[in-house]
Image 1 (cartoon, rainbow, N blue to C red):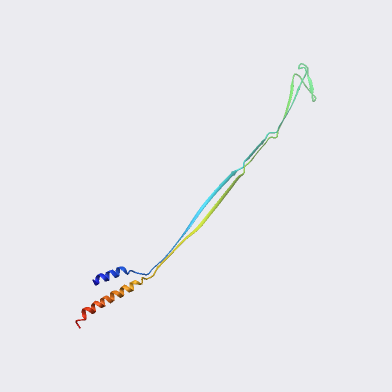
Image 2: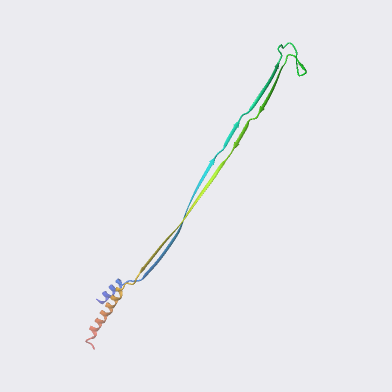
Length: 144
């Protein structure tokens, strides 16, 4: 009977004090990159052509004619003046925008667990010791 009581008291009275400190820190980084490309190319073509055609013909092709001190026979004088002032303009504009967003977040988890000693453990030990003393007293009481 005593052995059962001792084993039962040991099982019921376990280690009473326990301290746990848990610190868990995490660093979470989130990066977002947004790239925006805007193409504003401009092509401009402007045509400006001047054409002056000057033609001289004789009224009668069988007779000679004189122009600027020279005599021509059966001829047609043609003079073309072409002025080309065309304009071709191309502008390339490319806007490049890059936005970086970085979010950093610290996550800290702290957990404290503190358990105190069970006070009934001393009471059980006191009962066991007193029971053993009582049994010893009963056994040796008649011997002495």
